[in-house]
Image (cartoon, helix red, strand yellow):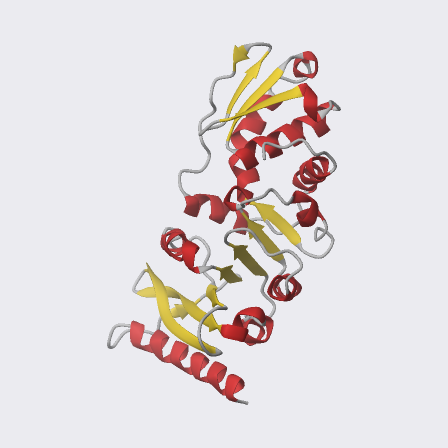
Length: 287
C-alpha cells in the first residue's frame, strides 16, 4: 500500500510540474511521449547517462525513468527526484518527464513492480542498460520481462558475454551501441564485394567493435573467424590485401546521437544477432 501511494504522489507531482512550467496567462504546455525510456544506471555510470540524456534534446519525447541501484545502501527504500524537459513549439512547449529513482537495499533487486505503474500505456518501452548486465540476476530478468527493447553497449563490459546475450534474443529485442559504431565501416566494406571474399583482412580497434565487425565479415563472407586478423587500437581501422581502407565519415557525432539511433529501431536486428551468435560459437575474441 505504501509503495502504491508513493507512485500516486509521483504522478501528482509530475502533473503539478507540468502545469507550473507554462507561462502565466498562456496555454498549458503539451505532454508528448512516443515511448517510455528506462535507463538502468549504476552509480559509476550516472554522470555519463545524464550527459547523454541532456544531449537528446527533443528528438525522442518520452517519459524517462532513471533507475539508480544502490543495493549496498543501508535500509530498503526509494528516493525520487522529478523534473521536466521542455522544448519550445510556437507559443507553447512540449514537455517530457524525467523520473530519477534511487533504489536502496532490496529495492534494487526488485525493480519491475516499481517501474510497471510508471509505464505509459500502449507505448513501446526501451531500456538502456549501462555497464555489463548481470545476466541471470533477479533484477535483469525482471527488467527484460518489462521492456520491449534492451539497449546495451558491449564496449562497457569487462567481459564480452555474447553467448549469454544471445540467449535472450527470443525474449526481447536487443540493440548494441558498439554494433552501431561499426555501421559506417560496414557500409564502406560492402563496397568491396565481391573481391573482399578472397582478400586478406586485418582489423584493429576497440575490443567489442572489432569482435562484432569480424563476426559480421565471417558470417557474410562464409570465412572462418581465424582468417580475419585482429589487433587492439583506440579507433577502428581496416586493411584489405595489405592496403589501408580510407576511414569513412562518422554517422554519429555524440553518445546522444548513437542512443537516438537505437531508439528509432523497433524490430529485431537479424544481422546483429547473427554476428553475436557467430562470436558466441567461437572462442576467439580480443579478450
